Length: 413
Ligand code: EPZ
Image 1 (cartoon, rainbow, N blue to C red):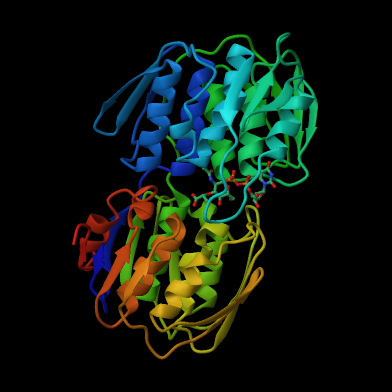
Image 2: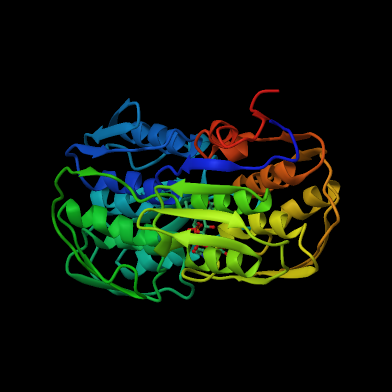
């Protein structure tokens, strides 16, 4: 990806549906054989990979522009390793497969660029629901030969994936389940709404205690996932970083309170409307302190993008990454562009630099890639972003969307 510097982003941009809402919803389609129709599905690689995985399990999937239709019964309980290793979200098929087939065999998720990311809390939940868990030559095998039964599941950490996986497993368990210390993310609420529309009985999603009453069968539904709050936040930061003025459409402002607050603190103006926000910078970038936290705290998925923006602040900012243990891979790449950042453990100190200059840099993961795009738009000169396929995993048409606002990005230089 080739990105020309000194861009100013003005105009309008449309946010796509949430990657992190759609991926668990796709997994939840395993809970029924009936037809599920999802609208406004973004063309991003993570959706393609999960779609292929579901087809390998036995689902029929048809796509027509942004509409995705899934139907049919899963017949395999063992998703293929070559797909599982490509995307951590594939672990989300474990709960639904356990619920539907009473067993699942899946390769242990490999670590990825942002840390080891174990699934111990997922397994603790399945075990509480009556599943027997074994490890066999690198694969996890979970079995519930007599079916799952409702239980109290306490999550040591409000893990998004564990909350989603346990919710999906409990949705067909015999009796009542309670997930305590559950994650509060909007994507959890969207998944619960989707399952309830299929006939599920889930209450409390969005709070830290979720009650799930198991049901025997689900029906087909049509559903539109929520907008992607991280894509929206990324573009809000990009507009502020390039001293532009723009309207970000298809946004739920409530989902972005922490990002909006930090943008305003840093010297931007954010006007919240019913389903869009307007952003513009009204002063030089002011340094801020950020600590990433589970929702509704500042999202870890916005940490890299904010760091790029703060690399041109008038002073030093501090970022504490409390969610993942290794989510500063973008620091060294930003420093190659002239940023002055020191990171040690979970803390990074960003000393505002006079300028950034274009360079050849590499994306290590999705959000680090987005951060480097923002830095490249601010920099003097051109930037070549290597491994930019990471960005395409979660940002639909990012080059076209930013070019429509005045950027000059060539996806295939
Ligand atoms: C989801 O990942 C998102 N992915 C991530 O977005 C996001 O960063 C993360 O939640 C936190 O908000 C999807 O929704 C597909 P977690 P997930 O379980 O579920 C530890 C992006 O850029 N943990 O809440 O994997 C874990 O190691 C991606 O879109 C355990 O220790 O996140 C991490 O330190 C990146 N044991 C912390 O909890 C477990 O069993 C948060 O992980 C599970 C998690």
